[in-house]
Image (cartoon, rainbow, N blue to C red; front, side, top):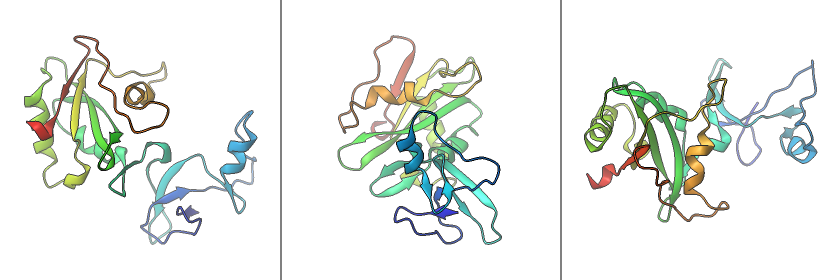
Amino acid sequence: MIAGEDGEKCPPGVPGTVYLRSDLTDFVYKGDPAKTAAGRRDGFFTVGDVGYLDGDGYLFLCDRKADVIISGGANLYPAEIEGEIIMHPQVADVAVFGIPDDDWGESVIAVVQPEDGVPPGPELAATILASLEGRLARMKWPKRIEFIAEMPRDPNGKLLKRRLRDPYWRDGNTAIYPPPQNPGSRAACHPERS
């Protein structure tokens, strides 16, 4: 079942929270009954994925609900943006997330790990943005691109996006912080200023 913010089922093609039902097990968050209860609806449960069903009932996942960027009232899905940026031949890895924006609520930032031997900087940022032309709506383009030598990943290879995102948020408010000052590890480019 796909449900919107109002709790009503979404029509085909409209993204919402993905709810599942299993006859095999009753899904619970260990030690967190409140989170378990919050993730239930009409005999279904959710683990926080966003997706939609097509006309034939096939499920398409968009992203994790916690990762959705809300910019100017529009829901932007980082996985979609990452999927386009990673196509650039000079990009080895990418993470996209929202950062506080006084005017839009959140704006899109991309943290890019360039391929070996590719120098980070404004020129690479400009070519990445140019590669999005015609493939991704401009409202989804990163307003800022930062470069990192290596993405933080756990031993299983899972991206630790929180490590990238946390420096921009303080206690969930909308104050923006500059990126960590670790010379040589990260360089920022502001495409809108280029």
